[in-house]
Length: 495
Image (cartoon, rainbow, N blue to C red; front, side):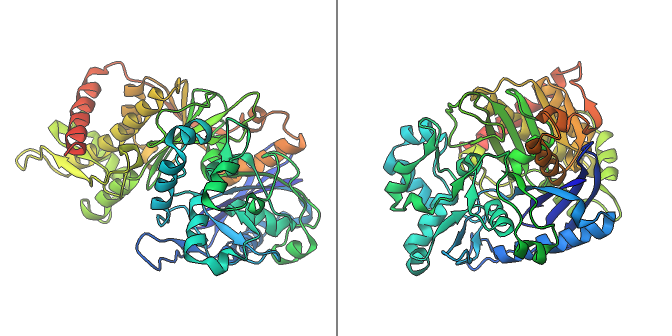
């Protein structure tokens, strides 16, 4: 028997099958092959049709079953991971009322900021652990103000994963972790933040039934079975946003553990047991997948927009078209730590929340035409991105994270020794590289709900360990280079 896991992104839907008895992955695939389109009717807007997600869930399921030879009737449960912060609204017939306003849409920024001031910063920070910001509830307030005819028809407000679960089971449900990512959960009172809904003029009746993250969240209906090919009657057993789920996939559950990703943007997601924050304007705090009132586990999320996109820019504009990322890494390794004085700030991908939402742009310092070449540019690029991770981890440490371990996926940036050694050396922690995916994690989490795996650690103890980067003994040259980079950043920031 098998569990299936879905990871609904804004680019594609990934799916994985794991053996229920062992947790071993037997197949991973995605659909569509090309990126899903994002509708941007105005600058700063980003929307997708939730029904299109559902169609792709069916396509990826069929593709995975064909690829693995597993029969539909051999699947015993479902786990769901999904793009965070999106807003889906449906009417009483569970019909979608408008396209989803997804995570990268910025139209509700001013609404969130005004609410932060209106209800009081202290209350938001102490109870929500966040500013209402440009998150799910603020997006619904935008609909209320700008599309009143649609708002009047809203029966339920859901996150993208809630919508997929509803399509599978016919039941509208959500989780505490999901509500916290939409900035709708009051950690201090351990309930829905009704006072925030009151301020925004939105009834809490729009919130679906709250279910545990690991639980039987409903069973696949006959209609859903016919539409996507899963067996009727099997349960949906797990649901979480992509960053908490990524941490779960990397076996990060305990205070001090950090899950990091280095894609187009970079993410540092740190686990803590503290329901306090002093950095609500620079990081976000969400209920982690194993959060309970008795043992709070909070995921502190720090996002770095200008990360892998800068190295990708170097690939397309600096090196030959035939050179791979591995070739680039090899070129960069010929240059010494500090790139012979060349320094790059990677913040050229929009406003950076960890810089208090300033858009400083990318910058280059100390370029010498007589000394520096493309290898220096590549080394300085990797170092600049690594330094931004270190800067972010310092913010997390100042907010109460007692770092004990860093785990990362086997992606392009972390494959670079320069990048990973720089971070490991400066923060003084091993970085363990793990070969896993969010879809595999969601499938294994489903097995935790049924008891096929006794604990979360049991479910993820057999993750494929790729390698470990250890802090290097000669830290001074890294520290000197970082301090110069940090000085550049602060000078640029204070302009």
